[in-house]
Image (cartoon, rainbow, N blue to C red; front, side, top):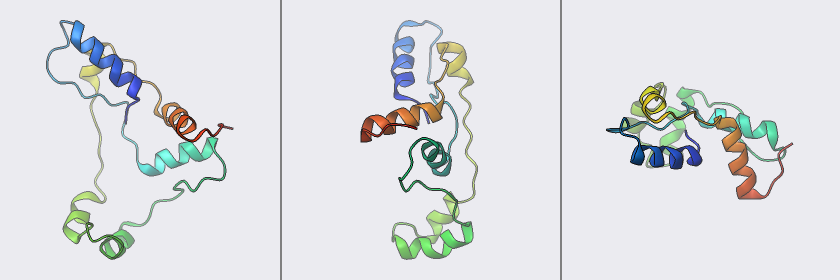
Length: 118
């Protein structure tokens, strides 16, 4: 995940900094939907944010029943695998200091819904 304001800043820097050659991964960190739900739940009461992770075995059994696009092959390729991203090149070459994702998610949700964080 990355704050859109950081993406805009990175694009500007990539256009004007000579050391910004090649491709850059723009990402503050790797977060799950559960991480995002927990961050939002801390600031907004009364919304049905995810609060727990379904066991992988349950997803394997019920996934294809709930959504035909979630066939067993797709589930096996995507469930239970960690995902980490190295953003060191963008930090070094572009000088990006990424915004905290919890703050960015809370600000985005507040802007989209008109809700006030607590």
